[in-house]
Image (cartoon, rainbow, N blue to C red; front, side, top):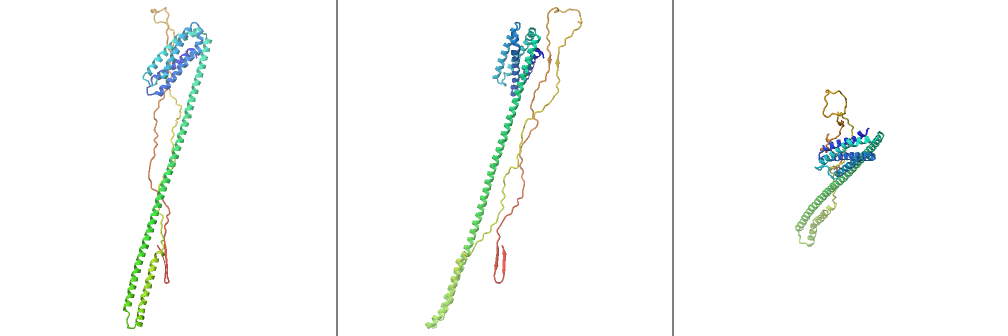
Amino acid sequence: MTLQSLMQAGPTKANELFTRLAETSDTALKTRERIFSELKTELEQHAALEEQHLFPILRKQAETKELVATAIRDNKDLRAKLLAFEALPKNDETFLSKVADLQKAFRQHARDEKRELLPAVQKALSEEQVQGIVEKMEGSLAEADQARQDQVEERRTTARREREEREQAEARAQQEQEAEEERQEATRRAEAAARKASRAVAQATERTIEAVAEGTREVAAGAQRMTARAVEAAGEAAGRSVALTSAAPRTGLFFWDMMMAGMGTQPSRAVATSQGHDSVEARQAPRNEEVIPLAEEVLVVGKRTVNTGTTRIRRYVVETAVEQQVSLVRERVVVERRRPTTSKVAGDALTELTVEVVETDEVPVIAKSVQLREEIVVRTERTEHTETVRETVRQDEVEIEQANARKSARTRV
């Protein structure tokens, strides 16, 4: 690589970045910041190469000393303008106009180098000195490229590590949230089960109290009926005793009258004795009764929600190498000699004339845009189904066995 091509490589790339930067909109803030950062790096690197490898040698030459001073002033002015861009928001309405002014100043600087500085260098220095400068510049460029690649790789590694840490943190947060939801669900299920159990116990207690109260009412009613029958029997016996006493014949003899009265009072005593026995039995009847409660189990079916699985959707970035063919145009200067078509001499003959023809190359300019390829929709669907629950319940039964002298009967209720 020659010194001229090496010195023109930086301005060529800078002009490409200027063009890309001018095409950005105010909304593409990230893209504008990235392109400007690349442009700033390229301009500073071009100035550093000149000041580090080219200017020290040119200062020693008398014919190039003044050119070096002018180039240094241009570099200082360029750095001052770049520094002003640091405080300017990239979406400011004057940003693109100031970028255009910066591009105009840099183009003028590049033209001055091409027309004045590079010819003076080639004239003042030998081929060995020029080649030494070229080799040093190439080494510096290689080191700068390697440093940029290391920075890019470091940023990629940092971004990858941050992304992995963020994904791990999100996974841990999701697991904690799921665990908390499971704990809350278990608490809700336990509370619901406790409420159901409390209701079941209350219902069973209520049924037992009602059964006991019903039995007590039945026993009291039976006792009342038995007491009433005993009173009626006692009244009837007393009536019969009075009737017998009044109906006893009187003979007029005290002895015989007493005997007849005594005979007449025997049934009355028997009746009284029977009446007293019935009333005692009537009073003891409730104490001889025994209430046997019959219970049964009732199937109570509840519902609870259980975790049957977790679906995790993770989006990540995959880098794929792509290729695309692009047609590029290259313009080269062709110099040829030919015989003139006429012998007539033009007016500007025998004078010095310099003609400059610029050679150009088209280089690929890569840009990427983001567009939606497809969408992933995540939702839950709720369906209802009927399930038959089978279980065994228990209930109390009673078996009554009656036996006497004539027959024995067993009744199951």
